[in-house]
Image 1 (cartoon, rainbow, N blue to C red):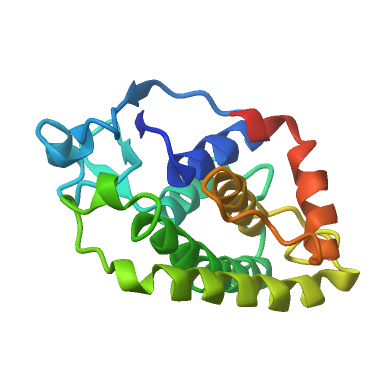
Image 2 (tube, helix red, strand yellow):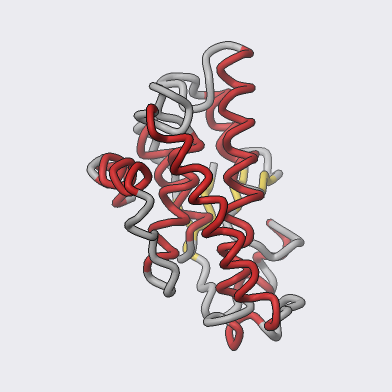
Length: 203
């Protein structure tokens, strides 16, 4: 296998997932700032031009971070970072999807359409007037999640999972692009500190 890596929160999710499983695979670095992900030869790996991608031994590729992580979990099930049984898997996938759709996507697009506009305006459809509203959606949903975290050690109760990895990587990214976590979200702030203490976050 080969992992096509770049800067940004999405590749960080997969790197952290790999580190938690103590997996090491060859890495091909793609220069996102130069737009190499939108040109050949990378488009042979992922025609959508997004990062990251996992190339399998047969030359086929898997893209989208949740699909990559689920594939890695299937071939290396321990430690279970999604789930060891159908119920645990469904619970993790439920929270991962909630976080992705309600927090990560508006947070990321708020950046792409705002502070990151010059980088993205020639690569994707951008809606600059939506930037502030998208950031507001992410803040609102983080407040909702903070209330849910009052009695939780991790997003999925007592289990550290892909849901924690996803949210951590995006909040870590957000802190560097003007979307810092509101300290009023005390439960999430404490959770973030617990996750940041894990060695895998530096992957």
